[in-house]
Image (cartoon, rainbow, N blue to C red; front, side, top):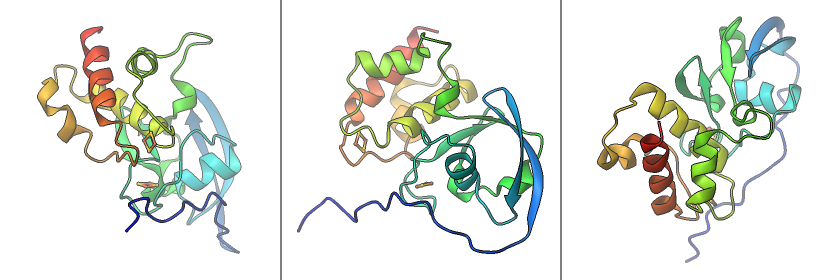
Length: 172
Ligand code: FES
Ligand code: FES
């Protein structure tokens, strides 16, 4: 039996007609005021309305971690987070990590350790890793697998991912 799983549908889902409300989301430091469907997830809004497609839609049901973003300093799954409930809040996506041409130290560590294969899970892995070190700067490297267990990698690039996070932790 193939272990490749179900192909990922890259189409953005249509939510149909519903109520909308205005929200201001501070995305990567920039306030963005938009009308959102009251049922829309942050993943829907980031990808379909704000054009920030770095945040990936894997399972769309909280199981894979591909959609991980930071809400404040907290890691959250954008596919399970209703956008309308976060008016005025700070959101960081993978697009907001680098400073100009300078990659974020976690991005640089992922490159050094070749911590990806197809790259689909990588934005979620990197954002989650940044969140992990923000939550727990002194995390024991032996705890990294458990702390990152919400982020799946179908290419099984886990050794590189864990090495990159340990490297980035050491560089802090
Ligand atoms: S797309 Fe959100 S957890 Fe999989
Ligand atoms: S690099 Fe392919 S899913 Fe992780």
